[in-house]
Image (cartoon, rainbow, N blue to C red; front, side):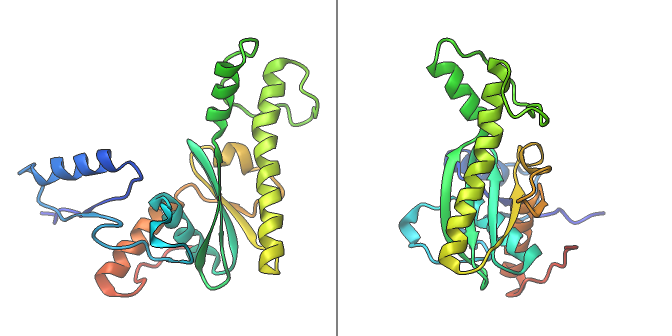
Length: 215
């Protein structure tokens, strides 16, 4: 007989996460522990931001996972519904960053906001052709390479303020498509936020980052 595994909830969507928490608590079939990161225990990363800054728990968890892997200053790019480009300094302190529209959101906004622009599924544009030879390729060029350009610009700004050039690590559902072949990105790690959850829970249990991961 296996002991029921704990459930750890971490979400920026409070109504959904609270509803899930209530459903699990009210289900007699579930006997495991249930915790929410943020209310039951904090993410295991220091932050220079004020408590009322409204920083999403997903950004902090991904930053914690990134610093756990790299153990040095880094830019954490989370490419999902929105894209966040955050900086963690050499002491492992989250410094904040930037929030941009995600790739699909950008393409949808172009289609919905300009009647002549088609609905374009997200894909990698022709890497051998810098010029978009049709509207679809031009839109994909703008989305993918525009995002890479934003990451490069913010990385340079962070490096100038920090006084050294940080590593760049990417995560999120669109990270492999956007950054796997990008020469600025040092590593693509899809599960950074999950890694951050595991670290936070381990630290809450033991007072230390007890879980060992491969790097």
